[in-house]
Image (cartoon, rainbow, N blue to C red; front, side, top):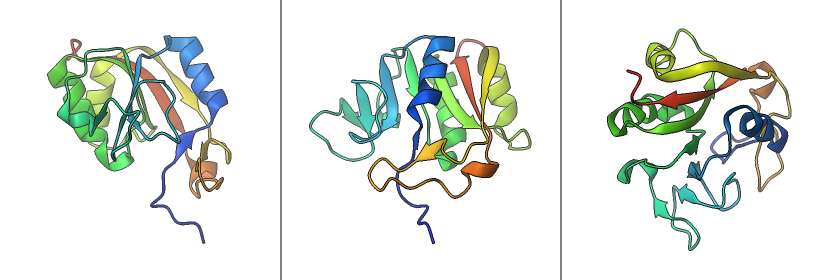
Length: 148
C-alpha cells in the first residue's frame, strides 16, 4: 500500500510543457528542496535555501508557479485574488468543486490539460507513483488576481 501523506511533484516533462506554454516562473510557492521547480522557492518546512516558510505569510509579487496541496486550493485562489497576484497554478480538473468558478474567473487564456498518466505525479524521495495518477487529470492555468 502506498502512503499518500508524502510529497508529490509533477513530472519534469509536464512542467516543461507548462513553461513552454505560459513562460518560466520566478518562484515556486509550494515546494521543498527535493521537489522545487524553480531555484527560488517557498517551503512548508525550514530549509536554508528557501526564501520563506509558508507561502501564505508573504505577498505574492513575482510571476509564480503554484502546485498546492489539494486541500489548499481554495485558500490559494483566494490569496491570488487578494494579492492581485500573477502566475501559474496546477490543480485537478474537478469542475464540481466549489473553488472551480473562482479558478475560471482568474484564468487568462486556455488552460493546459495534463493526464491521466500513471507517471505524472511522483514522490521525489521515494520514487513512488501517486496512487490516483492513472485516473487524475490536472490543468495548468495562467491566472491573474486582477481578473476577478
